[in-house]
Image (cartoon, rainbow, N blue to C red; front, side):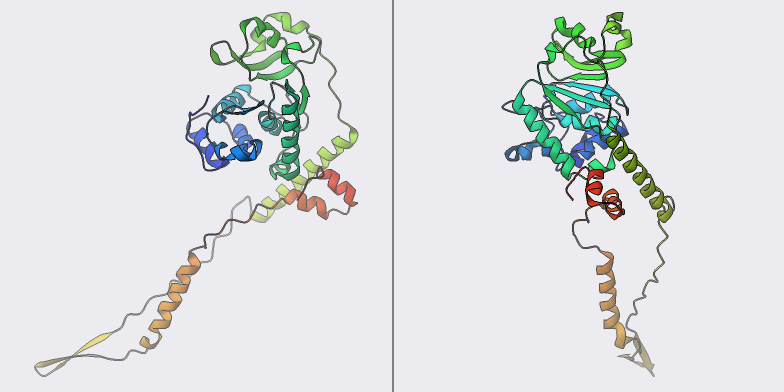
Length: 339
């Protein structure tokens, strides 16, 4: 399923196409899609197809088409601090994008039937945390994946604000899915012949009110301190940037005087009834070649060379590493990420 938009040359171009086709409509969803490169969730030999609007399957590993994921993300109406359950979490691509929006105080759980896919998802999550600069630009709610059958979840489990099921759901399982949802929550799933179906649980019968919820896991004080310190440093970096750039307005560039090119002067001399054309030496003529050469150099300077832009600077990492703290504590604040 897919093929609704044109293929992109890279992740950003794919997102541009999804925006143009109105599959991505909100800034939060756009930021999440741009932060995680879809190709990172493909096996190496299949990456050439990563930016096509097509689903991909290899063995038990499966990725839905980008247009499907964008519709799902928009329909879930995600907000920081919500709880999310992904039934059939697969590679973890969707769960990781959701985690960028939920923030550090959200809940992000995934249930997957195949243990080999769980291992694949954990590897991709670890790669994202260790290597992606996007990790430091967001407050991330790390997904937690478990192996299991999504139709055998205990009825006294925790309920969630947002639930997504990627597999087709039969009509007889509709109430079961609703009972996983908190009142006021949103459920998104394929239901029988409908491609996508979602609803707010406050329109459900009150049966969902009586499902006992398990206690929510509490973060350690150490983890909470790390979140608070990173948040404070990000605010300081933002304040310094605003102060330095004057609310982002750059200084007006100094006007550069345009060099006037001097032309050769041809002089016509009238002598009695005859006309003589001759060239009279002009003091500026001696410098005309030099002027032309200088003009050429100026034009070359105006035209930037076709080189790749410098990679963006990770200011959070720089700031943390500059703190007067023991190295183990610095790397803890950086989640032991690679440079």
